[in-house]
Length: 613
Image 1 (cartoon, helix red, strand yellow):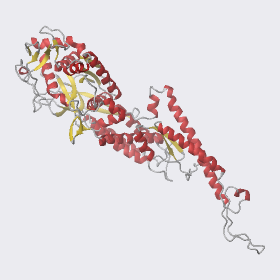
Image 2 (spheres, helix red, strand yellow; image 1 turned 135 degrees about the vertical axis):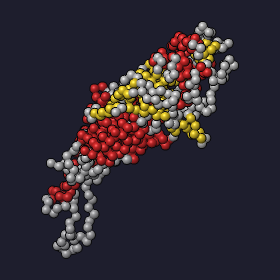
Image 3 (cartoon, helix red, strand yellow; image 1 turned 180 degrees about the vertical axis):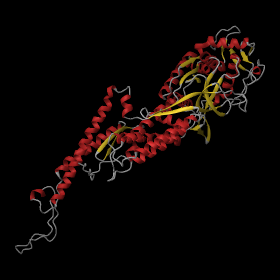
Image 4 (cartoon, helix red, strand yellow; image 1 turned 90 degrees about the vertical axis):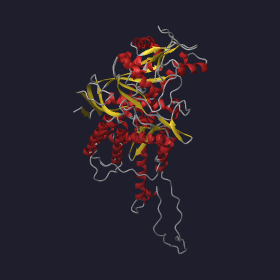
């Protein structure tokens, strides 16, 4: 068996382990690495097919990620690509128990940065540092796990020049009159694994072949430059990633990621020059490319990009949407597929999140005894949970199919939500919270592993922003106090109603009539014969019971407290004789309006059912 799957109810986590396997021939121009079979099949764009994911070192994945060229702010398209690969990384680390060593290259010297510096009148270093800081801040907000190591081009110029010199010495590149160096594509027969139908080439008068590309660019006036034996200049774009990744990982990289727009020429050229430098036929074992975020403009669907002027800065997007919403938007589609950013797709992400948060809130309420319902079937729930684990396992093993896993989770949540909405009957047995608690913990832990935080009392208590669980304790006390006051007020009304019923009994004393005066069944006898007997029943003005005068303001005050906490993002749910609280995921005005529509207002006719003794 390729891998072993274990699940632990106590930790509510999935763990997968890799086992050694023999080498396989997966393609005529691509070789499966020797090593350990993780049990995952990945879509390798180098062969345009799903292939077994093998790692040479057991439990270790060497991953190089193309980072940003820091000349402008990151937009939603960038954010989606990094979040999707962050999800893949989380699956490897948290589900498959792999140690991912990730290196991300940051291009901080490039034509675009130089042009932006000229436009703004600032230095290249200032422009690069500003936008690098903003990029890192955006990734932190998006909960993208930081790489093991960031490598900035200007910090590794010496290594890059040595890489260029080695290619020149090996006859893989040649010099030009302007001090540039070009890679000789004819020396790499495998060139073309990513080539698109519209072949992209660099223009240059000194090139032997139109496919040749610059590994070193000769110096130009007003541009950053570094001295080399073949002349001053700066690195070409493609050589930067090759040199930095080789410095970190040597002659073999397990995984290399980036947007699909980087396949050609960037990744094509990286592979060619790295194979030439190391003297190997295959440098990267697995190429993974993310799809684009698409938007509609003038009725046409197109890729979000700065060049097309249709981009939304990531920081602006996060002013109107939560991080959870964006990550759920990313989770709803496979990483290699294009995804359209529309109000509908964002609403669907919000709806899925709302369903998950309601599930956690209701499950917590049931476990704590605040939600009364028909006793769930524990064996049936555990059977459904076992099926969910199997579905998640199968999804992750198929090219990190997190979107299918989320679909399976939502299906399970729908089942639990329906179970908790069944009204208790006379046959309702003893509460059985264990299966609900296990289910809730599994879903919360799985979504947390994928980077989505389903806020609950437990997550609040683990929060570094709350000292010694103070806030959670205060909220528990406030809701408990409100519930006792509210229940006392409602019980007072029930007492008044019972007294009212007693007052209608003629056998009761006159004193008991003071609360609710009643009409006699017949008019008094006309003893004097003067017609003094009633011909019609007199209008008797009812007195407002003193119990109600006391009760109504108390319940109104309870509702005011509930509404104030609602405004602050904390929702109190009154469940008959009990109440529970939970955090609202979306605290925007629109979300609060939507919640208010379903919020129960004070019902003066409500009568609590007496507790069984």
